[in-house]
Length: 215
DNA sequence: AACGCTATCAACCGCTCTCGC
DNA sequence: AGCGAGAGCGGTTGATAGCGT
Image (cartoon, rainbow, N blue to C red):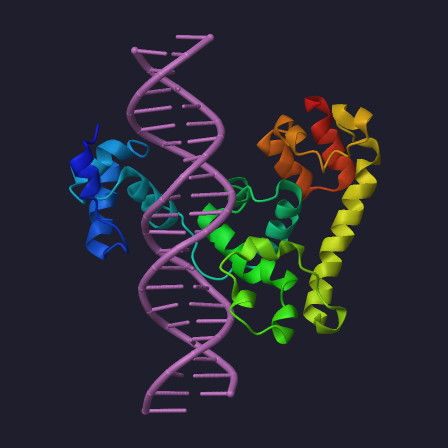
C-alpha cells in the first residue's frame, strides 16, 4: 500500500519515451492489472492509475493510431445512439481503439456536427465552451448543414428507422409502462456484449434471432 | 510577423464497481 | 452483511499546434 508521502511525490504530466519503456518492461514482469505493484516497483513515481492509463491507451499491443475509417465512424455513431456515452463498451467493438480515443473522437469530430452552424453566428468565448457534451441539445440550423453532413445523417437515420421498425416486436419487460426498448437503458445489460455485436453486424431479423434466446 | 482564437488529444480527477476479507 | 482497497470508467482540464486576421 502507498503511504501519503509517496502519493504527494507522484510525478504527473506527459510521459517520456524512457518512462514508456520502463512501464512496458514492468507490465511484462508483473502482469497487466497489478497497477499498484507496477507503480511502486517501476520507480517511475507515477500513480497506478497513471500507469494503467498510459498502458491501456498507448503501450498495449495492437493499439491502432491515426484517423478513424468511415466504417469506424459509422459504427461509433450507431453504437453511441444505442449505448450513449459508454466509451469502453463502444471501444470494445473497435479493434485497436481505446475508450479515451473514441471519447475524444466523438467530442471533437462527431459531436461538433450538432453545434456547428451556431459558431458561424456566435463567435464568443461562450461558444467555445470546454464542455462539448453540453452542446448535444443544440440544434443545427438547416441552412448550415453541408451535403456531406446530410449524407452522414441519412445513413444514421435509415439505420435508426430500421431499428425502430425492428423494435415493434422487441419490447422490454418494462414495456407495460410504454417504455420502448432502446430508450430504456436499464434493460441493455440483459444483452450480452457478443449478442450486441451480432445485432450490429447483421440485419434486424437476424439480430432478433440472436437476441431472443437471451430474453 | 504577430497575435488571438479554435481544435485536438493526452492526462488527470472523482466517482462507481468489484472483489477479497 | 459490511468494509476497505484497488481497478475501471466517464467527464473534464490543460497544453499546444494550427489557422485566420
